[in-house]
Length: 114
Image (tube, rainbow, N blue to C red):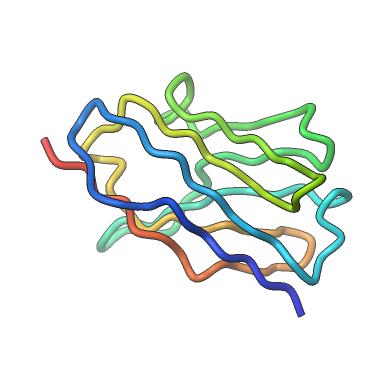
């Protein structure tokens, strides 16, 4: 079955950076678009960024555009989210998502303090 395992979350100060990773297995990773979503306490889960199978096209939520970069390594079945200039409002659980399989990872906590 599909397994998506996120890592790289943590607690940082505002303005700092983090890189999240998602290791995928049980899926033909290189032919699937992928995405990162996040869910803050008391809020609905929201799309952060998505990337096409080959990595040539990306989409970002307006709130993270210019600060976050989604990328992938199809040789290693890895999805990344580079987050820069983090803000307290970026605090959330971040999830890796494979839309075609409707599969979610377990999530990784990102906490940004001011």
